[in-house]
Length: 484
Ligand code: SF4
Image 1 (cartoon, protein in one colour):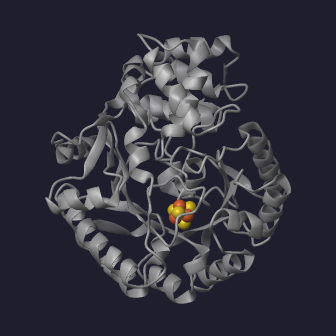
Image 2 (tube, helix red, strand yellow):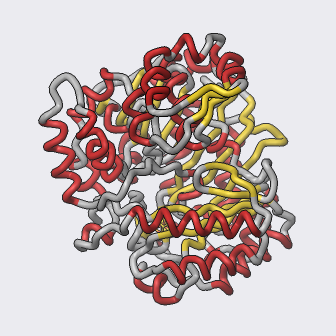
Image 3 (tube, rainbow, N blue to C red):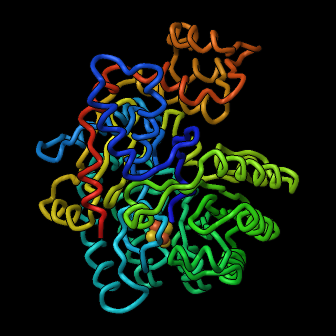
């Protein structure tokens, strides 16, 4: 499960699901040249429900990216441009397979079972497709040292030890991964025995995210998951025994069948293990979850948020400190640098179906989502990019401002100047004026918001050209693609 790399666009109490598809369509239809202040909240909520990527806080917003599947985009030149101005590039690899599909999952994964010919054949084909994609990009990155690798999915821990070796040999053949790179792996507690963790460790993995999500038997069975506290403990101990101390555990708040007591009990049990980091994610019932497709409603977002905040308070009392809007860690270094540092002058090349890429000051792009489409396209030895938006430094500055002002509620002026070479006050005069009217202020070297102005901040910073492009965004394509 991938939630630890996610930063979800939050909103006031709104349901998810199909009604919001209709809502988006009507909002978008009524969009002429501007979106009124009144409709902006609805508009963002609707976009959130349609965005399966989880990276809802992309800037430019995901829905404004163009469908580029019908035209050849010169992705290599996009990256060559980016490499001239970014400081470093990490790799993100999306493994598109899971044993079974969990009811709450909004990702386009294929269920291949835990063992047997279907799983083996799926991974064989995946490695072959991934190799083609790596060989497409490797000429661009031949001089680039890769400081971080994130292996997510899906369920990367479905790989067996011999496949783990094949996978890493493949990556190392095409990219120069730095000897001290942070290499993060997502695991499912069900299939994380000592032999597998040891195989991952010997290939360089030094940080692990355990996707526990819940420990409550009833919640798990309602969501088609089987693991319990024992399997999470076993996975945690296997990581420790293998010398991996950077361990993150993911929980989700607001799952179907869950209540406050169940979530907080899980959290106490997990916190007692003292993992290096804990993510408290929110269940987002996008139209792609099995829950939504079966007519299930999303949770009450205000309630979920208040329970989550109780959870963060509990962790604070247990000695954890805030890492980002969804996680707390034992030290400031208890984090996945690829997620937390992406707003700096950094890029991320996404490989595999549905993978998202950030090419600093040049583009954001996403691969074909369906595994079969991705495989078909890379067989032709062309890039599997399906949606993209081409950007410059202005968009990166906005991405920085949005990230800081929504996650931390403040932005450091010197940090901004050091990255972009211009003053924040000069670059965003009108946006600052709007926010100051609502109580934002400068103190010492920081621009500070008095409270979370999640909607107003976006309304102030989102550029009109992207809001207009959102008209073209329809969730239909992805809805159809992920139904099975
Ligand atoms: S294990 Fe479940 S939640 Fe995680 S990616 Fe697979 S289907 Fe989604």
